Image (cartoon, rainbow, N blue to C red):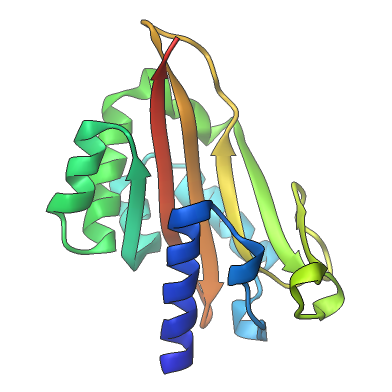
Length: 181
């Protein structure tokens, strides 16, 4: 159990500091491999109702963090104690500004990270924008491709980073930033 906790801690720290980092990945087990049926379940639940406070909260890791330059979102990160509470409040914020954030529902680019051939070495980590059949994916993220300028602002970054560990998919980190345009 401590090994799983340490892995999640390392993963969350790495995601916060540098996005998804090769050095953060460790050995995988069958309980840590994302399946096509889980992707379908996310499509039918999480993405179908995006941004749903209930779905965000359901997937949120207990220690989920938000990296942001938006004052209102930074307040969520510091004011709410648990990941599910933060996720719920973030979903409400995203829903409040659909002109900026609703496009992620349809225009998100997935990236799947996996060890090529199950070899657990840093130099065997690969990424793919399509689900790699026959590989063990335990980390993946969805990123917005929408860079439209509206009212002098645009979304500079919107990324939801997930990990599958001990049979459960968890939203570990959200990166969200705006910039002038």
